[in-house]
Length: 318
Image (cartoon, rainbow, N blue to C red; front, side, top):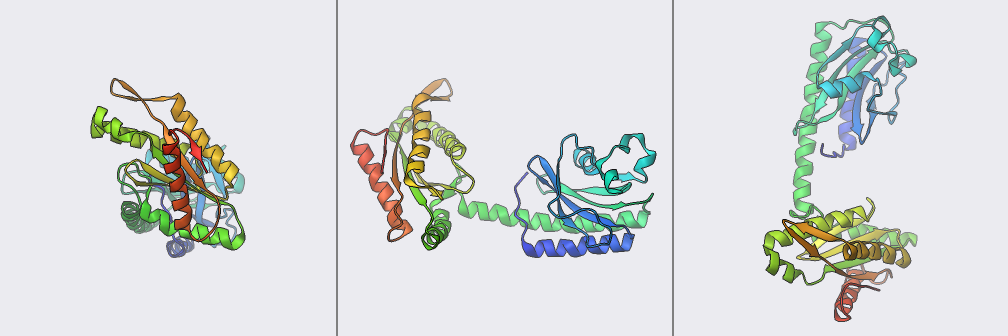
């Protein structure tokens, strides 16, 4: 499932939707639930009296016993008129909150994945009329239209900001967003480090294994970079076999540890391409002094890479 960013304007629209839905059906709770990793969380909750659900409430999704877990698994409507009268649902966690009836539908993404659910819950037995079902279905379709637009916009943004081969951020995005991190670090006196990384003798890999082999190495190496960095860091491919990482709130000592961890992992392991085992080493350069500009930090790190190559490669200099 694509990790969608839901903007404030969209949340406000959805808030109006669940408020109207809960008011017209006359129930304590109308919800939009979202899958968040291994959890299910309340994304939007109706501003109705006696609603026990709050935005941000979450539960582990698998084996939760929640009504919405079944909706997500089956991708179908779920109607429970009275959970207290149904052995299957008597231990449902929602009953502890006094919610004994449920009507919910899955919210489907354009790629067929499940975003979450839209549902209503009542503290008393409720069979929900066909008119109410039609109402929720119309609101479900409206929200799925919003999701499709968000999904498409994010796809276009990814095309503009990411390298097509490795799916790392590209040079353009690095400097646009990196400049914000740089200015923030300078203003608040925070640590910031830049690491430039170049794959040693990459031309030999292309010559020996073809460009498909070279592309394979670039993609596998990109996975190693992501594994050894944090979500807050900006990992980018500058072009060819050259990569640049902006390490947020990271001093020189920790930046060296990150680069050395990556370098040693490559030194020990070999990439398996078709029937070949390919050894790869890297040269790393680090800059951690906030002087001049982000571009000057990148140039300093790049100069350290050049020096590392002149000194024999497969090393980290700063």
